[in-house]
Length: 357
Image (cartoon, rainbow, N blue to C red; front, side):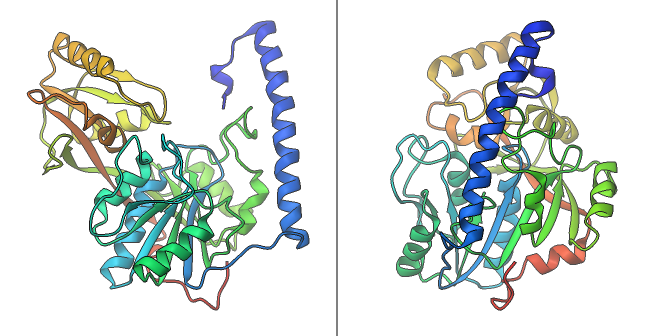
């Protein structure tokens, strides 16, 4: 996906824009055809014999699904509900029709044989099976048969219309809900904004206040839609090698990440009070190599850093190749609700199966 500020200027920029506009048109036509087939009844969505909650977005990457899924899964588990998380498994190096990342008791797959987000969820949710695969219905049936779950969370499931759900939570960025307004690949949108009508509730993420301008405009356009506003906050550090949870302590670190929104990580790192000794940005979902680690070591030492600070998603990939003797810590973040707290509380309970959203 390309945004306007990533495009070259002049005649070449206009040519690239034209090509991407055309590609977005084909993408839009394909999406419309797919949705029409389901709306017409030619293809029917299937229902699992358990309750289903979906968490997803309209834009590709960067809205913070993982912390939200974690928060919901922990809330369900703490209330004694046996659940599983079903994920597409993007970034899994060895694709399989179904893969058990965690059976709830132990981790069965690790990166690169496990998708980053799925592994991160599994490592933080003891007692919660995490499964990956393209067919969420098959995954759900497997979770019910093998683990006896009473409900599932679809991670990144908004576009997975093959499966019905009782609750459908849509995440939108509080500053730019629709990016530059274009569909992939011209922009970041997976679907047109009209797809909002499928949502049972909207959670705005990455807000710097409880009433961002974009949220207020959205609220006036969709007055009947339950709306919540949130932000992410740093709350701990994790030692990448040992997995030990540590309090956040002020130190000078090289900031390293390979995610969709590096600026958000830098903001959280700065907010935590950890001093920046330079930063290194890798592509989203980057698979780190030993050469990368050597380069990170060299940059950190040259810049006088006492350690490396990264994201938890990057940390799970660095763990197996990181050398002992130089600290590498991942910043753990939590979800803070800025407005709509009472609405958010309702999402932390299993859905009423008689209400389909």
